[in-house]
Length: 376
Ligand code: T4K
Image (cartoon, rainbow, N blue to C red; front, side):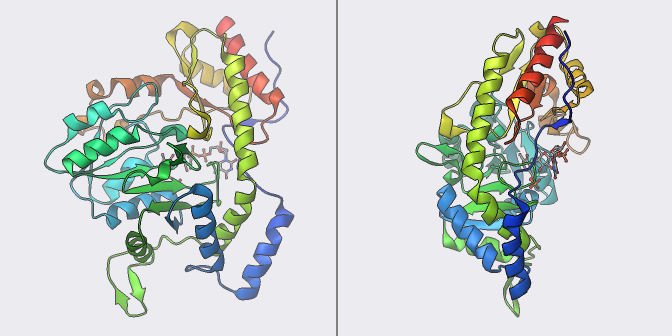
């Protein structure tokens, strides 16, 4: 029997929102002190709170993750070519183009969906200055191998860690690897400030440079040291982040339970593959991707449509590949023959809804639709 439609549509995610009444005191404070932006008290408090929570030394808050990526490249004076992954959100490569840098795409490892370090060395040219890997779905890249290659060739590493809030590796934050890591606090991320982002950096000097860059390059009232941009996080966003942080551990636990329930429900369905489970601290369950293999007997896009017909708005993150968009597809590294694993993943992936508040009944209905579609 076809599973019954749920009473309300289910989206791939829903933002974590604390109770409105709990946010009002923060707004009252802002109204009282009339500091709305430019590094106000909530901005400072959130930087400190996030350093403690994440286990990192320095953090620079931003308006969004994309501006943070663009500024990270400026901060390290990256030029020429940067090796990156085609299996990500477009912002990863767009941040390079906005800086006049050429992205060079390498294929992914189909087990992790992250850039395969085995492909990096062959892509290095005299113009290569950096590597920009992505911790896709919040699952850590092979940070040790990437570090080794970067050290051998004298390259910088900027992690697009937009998905990797709270992810740990080897007992510490994964955000401490590489020269810089960039987070997104967009509404769809596990920790959100409505819009927002951050750069994690290892030392105070780099933080100072980034703080100048995100404030037009101003050092003081009359001194501008770089062609900076306006990337500052406002007080409202920072205040919301402080409140949001209080609920994040409970949210992560709920995500873990949803992940486990999907895995159990989907285990017996031929042709539906989940990514290998990773050690608990090494993921934040930001997404729940499944791969629709040929053995399922129904194509990915058909399943995607059946889910939509049931008001289940799963998403094909990341299809199309970045390298297929018009501004990238003419590049030699975007050639399909160079990226077979990424292409296969993009053709098979569906990210199922996962967010705190998704009920067992909803998870079971989504799973039942997937099971029923295969059988019918
Ligand atoms: N690097 C990576 C690897 C990234 O994934 C991203 C962003 C970035 C860099 C750039 O960071 P930011 O500059 O964004 O901080 C979404 C997000 O807009 C984007 O932030 C995110 N990655 C990307 C993976 O997903 P869309 O176009 O899929 O979002 P949208 O509006 O279709 O939202 C998806 C679903 O979420 C909706 O169907 C309903 C729900 N939703 C969404 C919003 C915005 C809500 O319930 N409330 C909301 O306010 O891109």
